[in-house]
Length: 96
Image 1: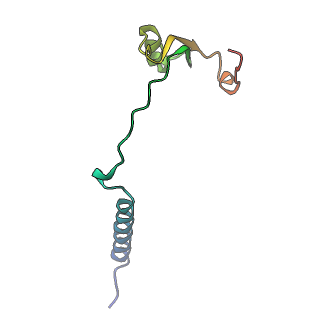
Image 2 (image 1 turned 120 degrees about the horizontal axis):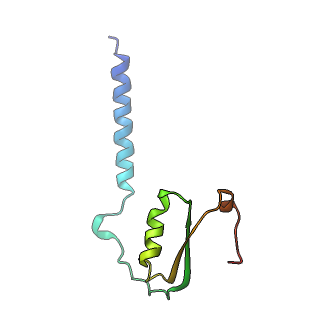
Image 3 (image 1 turned 45 degrees about the vertical axis):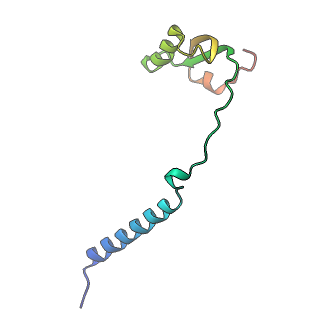
């Protein structure tokens, strides 16, 4: 009796997915067995935080965070600086 090659491939794929799913689940810790986390001590706020992005609409959230001082718990002063060009990303300004 000849077997249908499509059916054979489907069965092999199904067996592979079942096995890989079982192995993935076996690697997960039990839901209740996670170790308790100790909250870290809050770090002192930075004196200055500079957010930078392209002069385009994609930077609107960064600009909004800087204008509304949404990151006041992270830094005392938050500024937004638009990029001049993409090459600015490649350069690291360590003197700022």
